[in-house]
Length: 119
Image (cartoon, rainbow, N blue to C red; front, side):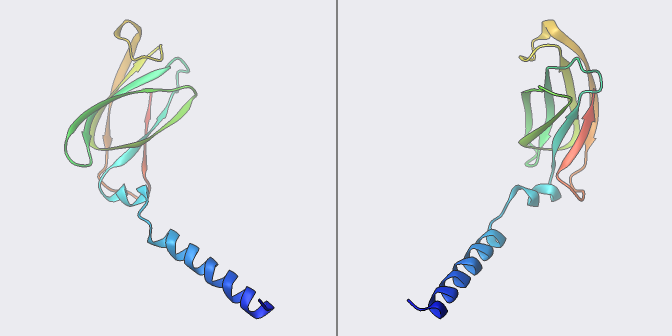
């Protein structure tokens, strides 16, 4: 294989890889029908949260998520409308460690994929 053929092969493979990335549908497209939650623990005491509300399909859903640091991005769950976020001082969303809650509005669409909720 001469140099010209090698260059053409490498260029062709690069173009195929690039168009494959462009053609794949990622989660960022859901920003027009719900958002993911970014939780900011302003108290430093929250180890898990329970989020309750409606997902991108309008179904009522609830999930418990560990919050190991001051900032936790709860990816893979898409919310829209009003959500209730309960705070817990343990990593299991146990009622015995309930710390409080807040309501937050999650827009159906915005420029990014994340809506911040703080304790």
